[in-house]
Figure 1 (tube, rainbow, N blue to C red):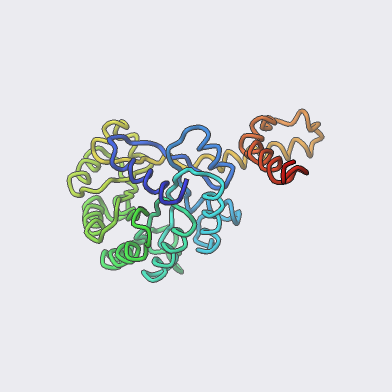
Figure 2 (cartoon, helix red, strand yellow):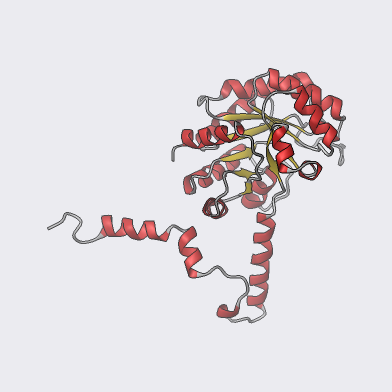
Length: 292
């Protein structure tokens, strides 16, 4: 499946009357597993990318090049359409343009650009700071202008609802919609009346996360144009726990055959696409390559 076909599948979902939960993926294996299990789309979080590539927390120490390379590995290994959390676009509006170019070339179906002031400033502590609406609009316009494939989905993201309040979140959502984004990712939306107010204020599809899926059923969310609702990023912590358990057991002398939680040979063959490689070996490396 081509990159354009994946993006068209992602866009097609935004036109449906359903709200779905995407698979949190972070590498080739996780994307293939999600695809095999029938997920319609995946999401690569900035936090999970930082953990997978650097083993570092989500402090914007991952570079754009490292992020795009990881996206490229995922899109090469799987046909799963996926959205990526491109954070603040790795700088100002010009950096946002470069981020869109790199992510598009890496095969992503959609990317989010947020209006959080990142990385953390000296003396900021745990406080979340937002860009001005004008600077946020500039980033959204730059992102839309930078894409070359019109099927790539640009998602404007804001956490204003939990920082400056729902009225500011609505104002930012309207401004980013007017700037040309295809969808909005609205964080920290915790109540039904907030979702209703946002649905009334904008007309583009919305993405939400966290408490939003507890405020409404999936059917109600879809009726309010919330087409994607993220339920965290549990896959990478699960993988870390499994590796920790296996390595600990092995260090304590557990025999390889008795190690806990190992994938079967059949599952490993499936996720490595062994049958494809066996077929390619037969077709291209056998002695009778040229026939009789």
